Length: 87
Image 1 (cartoon, rainbow, N blue to C red):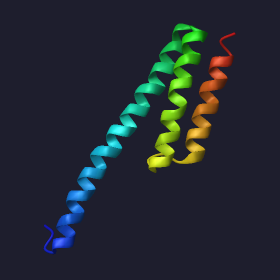
Image 2 (image 1 turned 180 degrees about the vertical axis):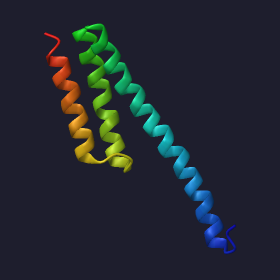
Image 3 (image 1 turned 135 degrees about the horizontal axis):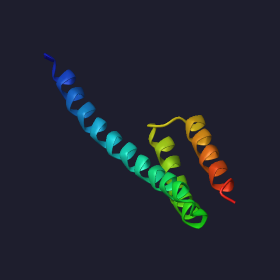
């Protein structure tokens, strides 16, 4: 248990930050899943629309510091490649 006031404050702040980051990450995962679902159905138009919606969400995750830039670039590249392969 924290004894100093600053340590207690950090515990509260860390808890709030954790909730916010978890919420942002869940939102990003939801957008990615919508792209993957459209790819799974073979619907290229829907996949492209979902991809356009997912892109800015993933970049917001980079700005917020919950995802690394290279990770997002790799995931977007792979998703886009799968969409293009639909034909």
